[in-house]
Image: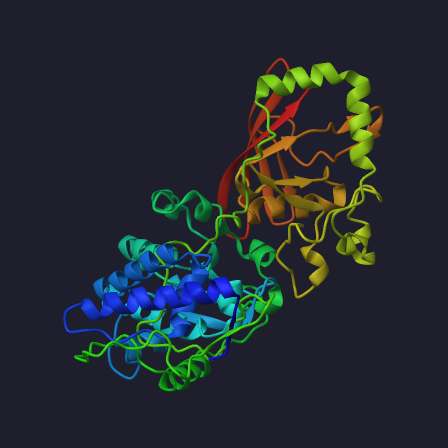
Length: 493
């Protein structure tokens, strides 16, 4: 293996190998020395901090031994049948950041047939191979938990907890995101409990998404057909690749009675030092039935999605600041913000087939955060609506900001509400303002009245009028599936 390390990383690798190999030798029966490639994976997961990397390695071995994730043989039952189900696979594509994509299909899992140990072995066997990729080591893994068409009988709470624990604390790959697709309503309660087992940083990376929203996180061309993309998954070809890959790797994690101390770095694992060059892993790293792992999520301290700003103010301070600015100050601040160049592109909004769906020619939606609707009859233009996801406090894509619907886009508006699972609509404009239409009457104004918008029926159940605002309780019915949901719509006077 040719690994380019900085002088500091070189010293860290030597210290790690020396400490870990001495620990392994002192254990009952004696354990073989680990390779440089394994050391680099653990050190990289902990920013080359030796003490943290050693703790990580210790936790890794405990996890693998406790769960029976050693000596994995894909040709022996029950692991062979588990792998053949295809319930878990690694896609040959990547997300926009280069992260590998792992998919667990819940509806294929039958708890009565597949034990926790066997299921975890199937995951780890494939993750071991995936982590041999240099790009995966650097960019991490996106884990998709596909709950499409799954029933409660397919769900195993204890197994889900073990998988989440493994991903956040028992494997060296950087877990970039966990995407739970089309989660049924009954999953809401166990999901809240499962979130308690992960650190706040990882909670910010766990999303429950609808099928259309999945493409916000992963390009459609990287998704399989079953998840709204165009990729034909060749799982057995992937398993063949796994078999060949693992057959060519050296086994490190085996017990041995060898009493002589192994060298810190073997002759064929020379560490090369390159001035001003940071670590660049290669695909020659050695895998084993017990591959490296991490004791936590693998996130660095500085790659969290959201962080508290030291310059923030509380609500009282904010009110006082607004009062101090006055109308002139707020006008000047708005002018300064408006004059800033855009931080993205608007290519989809400017497409000819989408222009008529925009209320204003100068109020467009960003490409990078736009809400995608499900495609109808393979017409890609049907995925467009002038709407963007907006982050909340420590919550990505917490809100959707959209224009007041046009008459021709009311169907799309309610389709978006349904597909994104929105339950509250806050209206910050009026239907008519200064004699101009700002929004189409997309909901029935009177209690008991209804409207039809495409496949959806909207009925106003109740209207609560307050001094400064009105709240309408709506019932939204999907006429295709006969499902219904309650929506609350608020509007200021």
